[in-house]
Length: 416
Image (cartoon, rainbow, N blue to C red; front, side):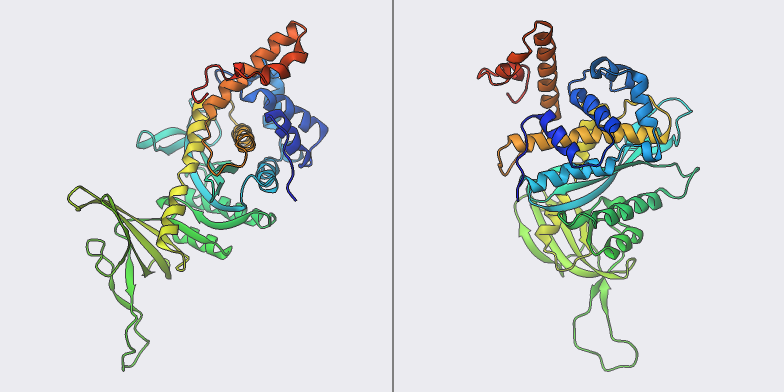
């Protein structure tokens, strides 16, 4: 049975919080901080948030530093948003799970787990911190909901980072088993995660991994000829795959700018069959100028589905972009791992709630253009107007302002 969501971000916030087991103090803090989070201009540190949230900066810091039983249940809060979207009929319950890491700039030397991490925007390793995030991506509407965030520890302080990513992915897949309303189609990740460690973890949970291969990947064609009358084991392989010659691959789609080929081959490193898909980019003469190699551990998956699902992976990049540009993902002036992860999860929760409100306002349409910048502008306009009306004793007329056909709260919106 579908549930009817209340209108407005505040109404949705209260609706979601009712589905999570929280203490009264936890609920009050979340209502206070999340009610104004989108409307805050400037940096998202404790002093600036306290100017709009009606609580002191010390209170905000204390909540971010709480541990164990006193810490906020971020996983339950994120999943409550996703399950609310499914139960309300706003999303079909078929999702992908994506994992990726994002560099977070951080100055100083006292921050916990600060070190050298890869910064994709500059193309080199820099000193800072790193956020590793798992997100659910809806297959039908390609809407992304981050559900787990943790800090990566540098190699000098901990084991290899890939092991940390794998442990996080393993834990998230295990927790998703307790949410039967979420139907997981596959796990998608970029080429960094195309390692046997991740393949074993994902397939061990019963899911397919879709990722990107290097151009020198060790692959063999599968022998499907007649049995040879000789001693020894039966012949399994029929030569090495070279991407310079794909005559034994099947062409599944071809246009003036792109050609897609596929074949089921043997992955030597992973010791398993893989569905490999090669995407060739063509020039105006039909010559290949570059190509990418994707794979799926589910060999029954079609090439078009592999391509479509892998391209959906890029939705998680927009989470990092919007979080950094508009919601202060890397503005936290805190040093401990607990506080940093709490700040990141608070930012991601606001993004999830805003996306849920955008889905509700979209009235069930099959496409949704989600822009955090416009949501921030409207939230600031609403907060500013509400403060003025309260000081004039006209707070009862705020609903009239919202319903005004001229849309005064949309002032300054790009998509208005």
